[in-house]
Image 1: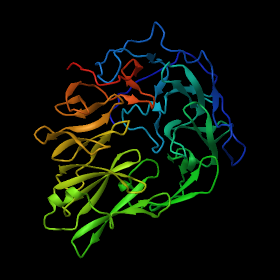
Image 2: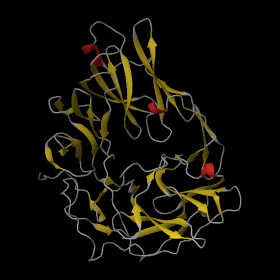
Image 3: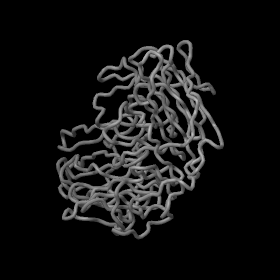
Image 4: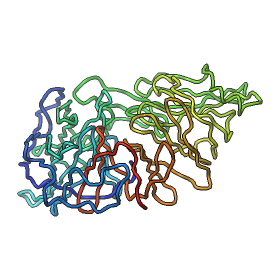
Amino acid sequence: MNKRSAFALATGTALVLGLTTGCGPDSSDGSKGGATASKSPSAGASASPMAPVYEGKPDPGLSKEPVWSRAKLADTRTTCPIDATETQRGGADVGLCAVGDAVVVTEELRQETGDGAQETKSVTRLLDAGTGKERAAFDALMSGEPAAVGRWKDGSPALLIRSVRAQDPTQVTYTMYAPDGRELGRSVFRGKEYLNLPVVDGHVKLPSSSNFEVKYAPIGGGAELTVNDVNPQNNIGPGFGYTPATKDHYDTKGGYLVVTDRRTGKQAWSTRDTEPPKAIAEINPKGNHPTAILKPLGGDRGIVLWTAKYGSDKAVIAVVDLATGRQVSQGPSVLLNSPGSEKFTVLSPDGKTAVGEFGKETVAWDIETGRELWRRGEEKPLRPAAISPSGVLYASVDGQQTLDARTGKPLSTYDQIPQFTTNGFGILTDAKALHVFRSNTAPAEGTS
């Protein structure tokens, strides 16, 4: 989600801030943590009669009224965590408010120490998406971003807490938690260079990394991982992901695709010996060697755009498994402005519907069958942004508009794109609070 509104939240309860630290280099996958956890039935009560009212536009993918809401607290800066692969918040970006089936918020309070200096203490709370009740809370002492949403080593959603030791501000603990508050692992580092590092799939990116050789230390202990990163901007897929490259076919003036697994540095698959989609013959009457371009789709899926030759504006879509290159389905043909113009493709949470803007037109298709669902020409460019669990497409076309992802039928306008938990709750924010809604089972008619 790339359109979020700034907001402030609060819980109305206070926790005693504490700090758990280690005495030396330490890693574990047990129950000890670098941040203090608190679980209290009363700490995260759902919306009270005094809860703020949502005053934004109705969303066709969400229930009419919030399931619960949480108001801001005047003297506390409260936001959602950043992405764990990043180290700072951009502009007014509210952050990531969902981690698995939980809602997550961070409250930060600046206070003076005994010597007149200031320190920032924070409490990050995991809240049940359905009720707003608190599952766990983690306090931390940190100068940067204390909390982040990422993935654990198995690819499951996880919450990262960074915290320094009060007696030694150069000692930092990285701890990751599951959405239910269970600790997954922790590691302690010493040195100012370790204070605010990105984390990828439960691995801390080490400051000793070079431009092309990146080193990662697994949280909870284990051997370091070295990743060769010549063109990081080209990486595709979640976590460490994959790196695609096009190799020239000099004899046929075409090209084939080679995809490398970043984690192992080895070739995962290639289109050199792959049979192009049958439909490519319809746009390749001269027998040129087809060229393949890999683009992200969502999760562990990607799309390969097959063109008759490099530079052609006609392409055939193939949905593939990123790990193996196995073709899941063949989609429709599309028109491109140029290779590389196909940037905006979104996948529904159930993995059944995709909508892509390919430069000259926008096309929606069924992932399982490859059947085209609808198409929109360049006279009204439509840029897809997200699809909700109930099948609402959020897009930019004549302003911000929602559509039925399966039919292309316009539904309403919108102010912001909800963030969704894995169990189908949508999160919207306004100047006063965070509001959590239940997803509709199907798109509903909205009003402009």
